[in-house]
Image 1 (cartoon, helix red, strand yellow):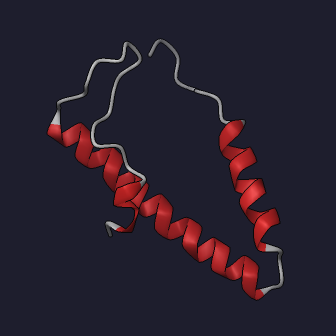
Image 2 (cartoon, one colour; image 1 turned 90 degrees about the horizontal axis):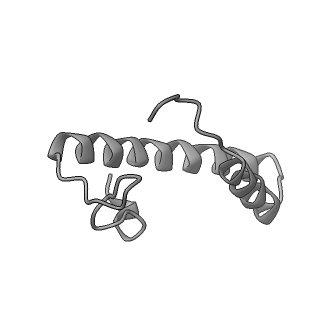
Length: 75
C-alpha cells in the first residue's frame, strides 16, 4: 500500500540526525507504517459506522501518539 507516500519522509534519520541508509531497516519501518495506516483506516471506518464523531476520533489518535513514550532502554 503506498497511499501514505506523501506522509512518509524521503529519508529517515537517527537520534543524531544522521541519515539511515540500511535499505532493510527503511523497508521495515515503511512497511510498518503501511500496516498502521491500513489498521487506522479500518478502525476509523468502524468508529464512523457506529456513530463516533470523526474529529473526536482523530483527536484521540493524535493524543495517543503525542503521549507515546520510548519503552526501549539504551537506544
